[in-house]
Amino acid sequence: MAGGPTATSDFDPARFFAARSDGHGRRLGIEYHDHGADWAELALPYKPDQIGDPERGVIASGPILTLMDMATSISAWLKRGMFAPQATLDLRIDYLRPATPHRTVIGRGECYRVTRSIAFVRGQAHDGDPDDPLAHVAGTFMLLDMPA
Image 1 (cartoon, rainbow, N blue to C red):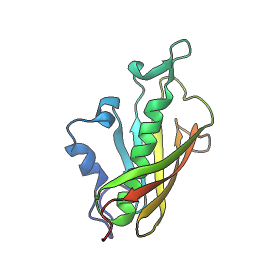
Image 2: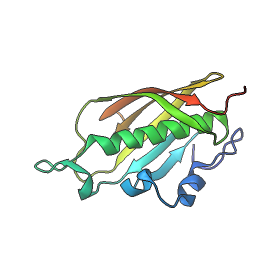
Image 3: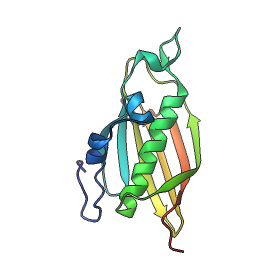
Image 4: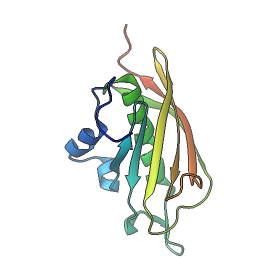
């Protein structure tokens, strides 16, 4: 599904990214890529200042973790149909291989269940081939706008 608000959501991640002025994700260069009703894809372009292994030119793990935290967080807003306060309770990341130097990393997050107080997410990062991921994530977000 192409970007833009869904029939059930007033939250538009493309507009969200266009409107932001600063912050950690912007400093890293994370960009909007695509989304659906319960998933979001973000892009982390290769930048020399993000290299964690200068000898091999591999992006450090921190920017990839930030990418996946943002992609899964946005997927929860999409699933809920709104931008609302939430906090990352747990985000486990399993690195399967290093990112390929000079390639953009795509992070896809999916929110597969929302309860009254928790959003459950999963996702993967790849650098060109979704069938050859470089990381998998699974996590939970605490919904801070819960009714009293």
